[in-house]
Length: 108
Image (cartoon, rainbow, N blue to C red; front, side, top):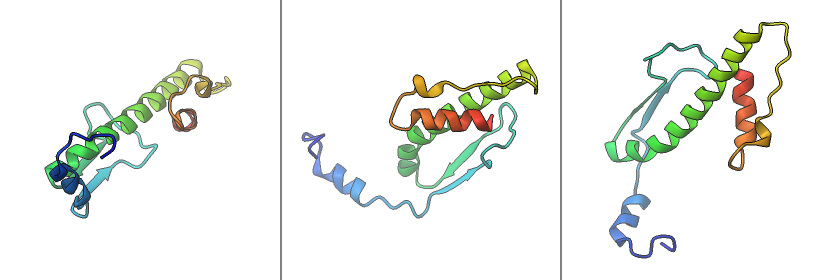
C-alpha cells in the first residue's frame, strides 16, 4: 500500500486472496532442444492469475533462451576444439543477471 497509496482497498484484497492452486505449468526440461514455433511453456488456470505470471515467466524464458541459443550458435561457428569464454558477468543487469547469463551460456 505504501507503493500505491491511491489504489482501492479491493485491489489489495484481490491480491491477498489469490489462489494459485489451480495453475498448471507445462514446460520443456531445461537444456532440451526445441524447434521454431514450438511452445516452450504453457500456463493453464484462472486467467487473472495467469496474466500476473505471464510477464515474469516471459522475461525469464526469453532471456534464458536468447543467451543459450547464442552460445550454441557460437559453439557451432567456432567448432568443438576452440575455447569459448563467457564475460556476461561484466555487463549483467539485476542481482543475479551475471550468474544467470553464465548458467544459460553453459547450457547452450
